[in-house]
Length: 314
Image (cartoon, rainbow, N blue to C red; front, side, top):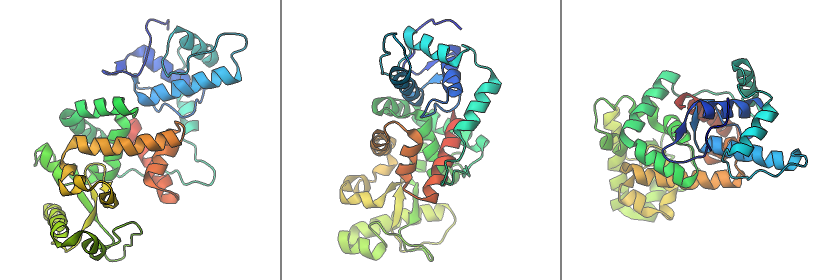
């Protein structure tokens, strides 16, 4: 395929077979962090992988030629360098699949077995509902903060969609958002929590009876919708992306103002935290998503599931 236009992460997202060819070449070269699947959509993750290729090319082997701009954009010089390295401007499906399989190989010492809470059909249904109702806000926030829209969809699928998929034909979108209050904060039998609040009693001691009662009522409204009996428990996860209650110590308005029912408020918190993790991981998306969840085997399983669902979203 011949070069016909510059490719960059912009809104609306660029799409086409030239984008797909770039992604195939990146996959064939095993550029890290990986760009995911060759879906023909030039999102933030693809831009990050292009930037990584440009840096590697400049450092490791451009010979006497000019350096590439390390900006994540595919101008003609990056196009030529990329396909010269890939050796084939139309990398075969077999080569792409082999490269993608290699990128998914477990990291030594880690548990990277993808066990998503949803199957591919359910993920696509959840993504379609989110895109239909909040797609403009998701794309604009993703672009503004350098985060991939499909990653946003995948995190929502991991965190909450297994519950709210049953509601989307029964409730309007704002009510689906409002009822995303999940996970008892250390009060459920057999559970424990290290972060504040470790349980409802500790929360009440810090924030008083009125706010405690308000959050208990929110949790019970969700419990009723799910067919559960009421409990006198404060819950810890709020919104599509489960913004944690520990954040009330520095971001009280989100909780006192019931902002988990506002998609923009939820997106702003998610992308701020995720953007910080991506920056600290120096663009390594897998490491960033793992850090977003935490550490240890649970975080390894989390990132494997999220990245699998991100591919399905694409």
